[in-house]
Length: 423
Image (cartoon, rainbow, N blue to C red; front, side):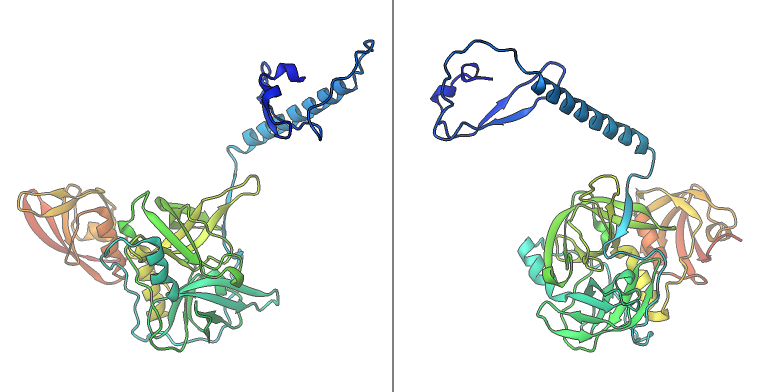
């Protein structure tokens, strides 16, 4: 294209870069950058007899066009081929081994009457700066030299008691022979291993300290899609420790297949990278509502903004089991399906409707029927299926769960002897 074909070119500064769009019929729009010769516009050449034009440029163009078309076709076929196949996989941030290696870190005794408390009422909404100042002192860097000599596993942890109990991911310390944690101030402590569960990917550490900064744990069941959330961690190792990132809740109760088991997690677009594992996912009130655990990665394409965290509501029972028994005990099954939202009654009570009862289950043996309304369980008013699930998490197999039912306008009292399945 010469200068006369570009209106207004003669008025331009000859040194500027001119962006020219040359759409061709049935082809994509090509973005071309044209740079004038040094010293000004290209000078006009004297007229000479027209020569036969070389076709070399045409062949080069056709070769490039053919190569581009072939690459586009290959990409399209690849997308078609993989559309029904496994396009992405979930990976823990620090290279979770498919088979746990075991922890040989010096231990600290269980059964010390320590508990993790979750569900504090939200306070005032905090600014991101206030959230960082509030939570960051309780976030630690976790460093565990590995038994196979391959290096040091680096992750993140959260202090939840002033005397030094720390929550992190199991895969951060898996294979570790010793462990050290560092506060945001740089103060470092030797840590001992309390307990952990590879499948739940939770581990508890203990350091000897007093008056340590602690994080407050909030109720993840109160989260809704679109809520702002934040993360603090050590992406890519200790050099970037204390990194603060933000995003939103992308989904709740997301079932994710990790190796051979399913984890129900919070999905978020907060930036998570290697080293963030075990760190806090924080709500807008400065409360920890999850422990960051994995992100989605793909061998076939770039995947960004797909991170996942263990919700605090389900984590509470598991952590307290680890503290008390050294292992996560099986969750009891009620054997009922109920409505998601509760119904209100003229006397002001609320209850969820029983939609299905599993034969031989604890609910069936307790006489619960389809059409009943569960008003209370364990002394707690049941206004939604989530509330009932939360109450169930507080109980163990073999315990009795008292319930108040409403059946055809009549109040009934019953108790479920909790079990792992049906009889």
